[in-house]
Image 1: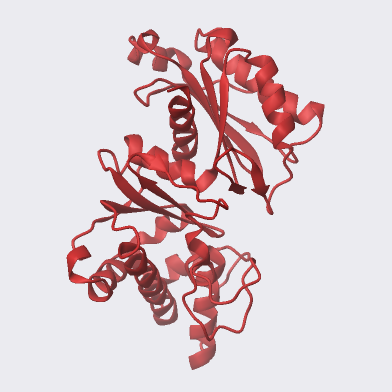
Image 2: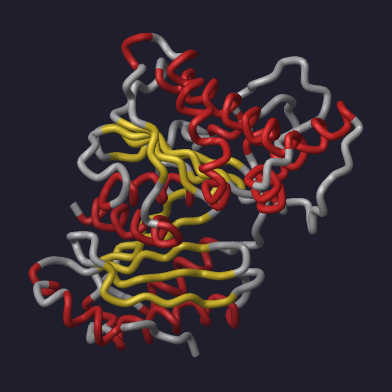
Length: 332
């Protein structure tokens, strides 16, 4: 059974939770599902995490719904009183909630929605892409709180993104709005991206991309590489840069410069109130952040020079909060 975290303390801090609808935000990942009971003010009153593998079949889907039931029960909320459930998933989600593509996870989305609907008969279930959910969460109660428009980039194993306009996530006709990781940054690239195209931002600004940039720097000057534990071990490059390793520092600066070019292109496309950067790669912001900010100001048109570039503040809760906000919007 899923472990419920810090419920007693959380309940004491949210005495007004019955004043409006309560929803559950569920953040579906490849190895775990994070979920939280969330108020209409964006307060998480209870949360938990359920280890998962492939999300298909009655046993796996039931494990998620049972954890959600126990979570609500531990927060003193009957399953029948949950007004909505927001699901964020790693894949291309159309405006109507259809999952068009999910290349990195085994997920029976229709089965999961049906299982949750049976467990929470009064809840309206709304589905959203995971990066879009993170953007919505940060706009709601995170680094973009108070902004009317925001563009978020999630930098991790890959590069995702979300565009929020007027407080609403833009999915696009084909669910492709916010697929910022596949902006073409290099038309001369010879290696293919995971999407099949070449020169995508993801090939340079992701964890794999940084390691590639670092190895290119080492190969150029014949320098020995620092130990890299695995294909996404960006931390090794960040630590080397902090220690003064010239090749690692140049790789981080290249990452910041390429990222700045992407932000400059987004500025003249969306012109948001702010950019927010999240994901595990932002743990190395100190190694590439200033380069990114300086290069952005150099590349962007004058009117957008002062657009702030912020690091996300919600951490692993961004997705479930954004999913919850999406569920609340679906109730209106």
